[in-house]
Length: 306
Image 1: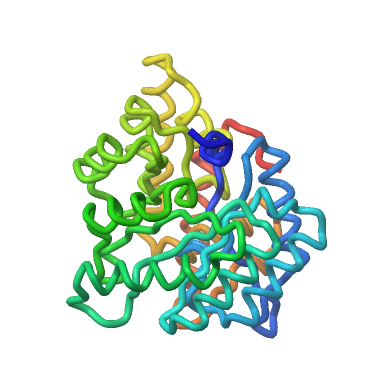
Image 2 (image 1 turned 90 degrees about the vertical axis):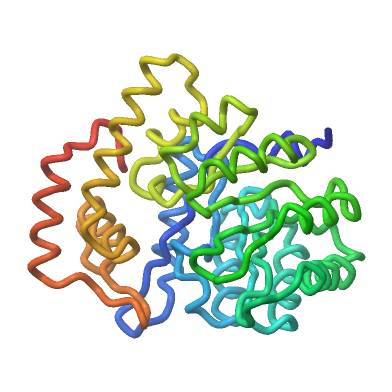
């Protein structure tokens, strides 16, 4: 078991990406949000994942934002950065840039535009990334979210990659929402890699098999709650935390997720700038914002937010 594997633990929030009025990334607010999450006990942060609207930003914007986080005091070792693009050369450029900064890991999807891709095609895609970055200390977290991208990351591909690149693959972020499949991946591949789930309600069952962390969207707002799901083993406490998590997910379940999360961040920070999203996403309507505000107030967070 490598030291990198051991360090791949804890909660790494899938950070929301704040925007300025002109539509550009608000780099100062992004860094402030990262610092707050780290101060709340998170092991690190995850930049430009699905919750962070990653595919909606250009390669240049994503590089600039990563550079800004490091320049403003977020250690690169505490950043996982999603580097996937539809074009392989852009994925390679983002991955090399992040790896040269020595980030904790790059989160990488299988190729996700063409559908019906064979396992050989997916394996060739990842192989090119590892080979082009062979001169660097590349560390990868594989990203499985087939219901969104329409391409699956098979167990056979993962097994082949682990055989070829042992020690360079830290884990799998399984955001399929299919607990049975996640448990099967955990039983098959932990160790040599961690298997983390995107559904916070599934974390305790994964922990029972050895999961040590999570990349979580909910952790933007409730980092301590998600940390408790990962770290606590007492059955009564786990049940209480699951009930709290379910209540929160039910609260946001009637809205488009990312705009709803940003409404809650706007309430936490008392800053309407958080409401902005990049097209094709749309902000919630004024009526939806008002209703969500009432629901969030009734939820009464029990943990410190600021």
